[in-house]
Image 1 (cartoon, helix red, strand yellow):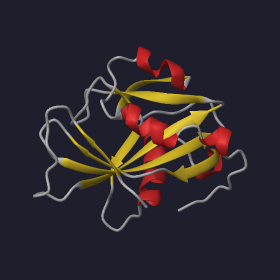
Image 2 (image 1 turned 60 degrees about the vertical axis):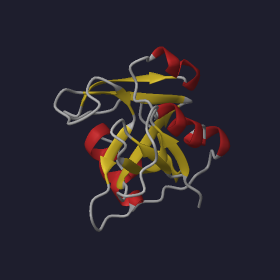
Image 3 (image 1 turned 45 degrees about the vertical axis):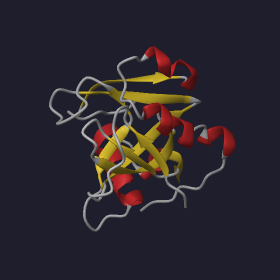
Image 4 (image 1 turned 180 degrees about the vertical axis):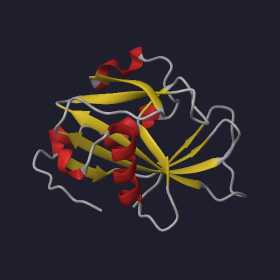
Length: 163
């Protein structure tokens, strides 16, 4: 499995620190993706449009953690998914030069209505071609989306793999 590398503008790749591992899940429904606006109660990227994310907890696989984050942040369980597939991991650096290993996933929801938690103020469904209208999105979201979409168009009969 390859790892795509993305560095924030003006930063250099850091090899001195091990990367922090996180999961990022793009939620799709009928060819649209959900963007989630980060609330003021979170520690970073407040007010920016994002996908579902979370730190990889000790002892959890990326797949398990992604499913946990989906349920916590969007109210989606494995039974609500028509598909759930991993994408390519990304190695990115934030504005401070800190490395992050992002385990990516795409979840195809059977439900339009989501139940968000306090990490988000709102969510919006949009077609991928209109993502650029969300000017206040996390910088690496476009790269993540390029590696994960469109799952539904390429794999319509994906089985539901739970943790």
